[in-house]
Image 1 (cartoon, rainbow, N blue to C red):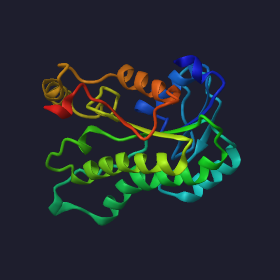
Image 2: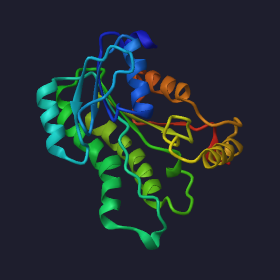
Image 3: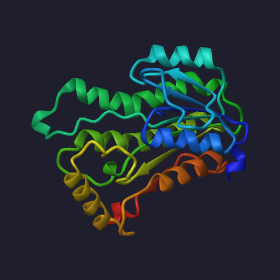
Image 4: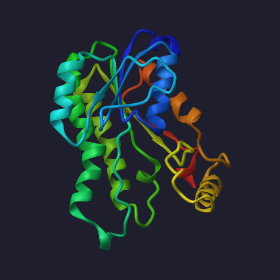
Length: 236
């Protein structure tokens, strides 16, 4: 499937770290012309030949509009942007609730608003949801609801923007660097718990998520779908 990305222009919003950065490297190695966008405007290439860098903050429409005007048309637009507000309901803060939905729901809508008109036939959007949208637990009501809302948004956008394709990936707990800031013991406990909750008996890897993402970018007859890359964890 990777040959389908040769020469394609791909914008990856949130490509400065984690899953986004890994996907940028994979897409570039598959022959795509990759532009990475981050809130600060700079991203390290990590050794791959990236086409360029851009500054996009999905919570600020002016940055999206400016980028769309200056960068030109893309074949595929990807966003891994997120903002977490993982607290009990009693401790919720309205501005942080809004920031979570701005990153996960409003941001994708605005990316579609400003980039869809320039995309060619066969173009697509790929957004990132997460397992918590289907596996509720205390303290994650905001993130879980935003992730589930993104799955609904993907379905509606796929109809609105057809024949452009719109899909999402919902990863489970993945060893992507997201949890590296935790103390070792806490991180091991998180991974052990996630592995036990998985039907495959392990946590996810960047390979798991990256392979699914590259496939979706080239899968010309798949749209309106949220692909769960979680080792079956949501079925436990």
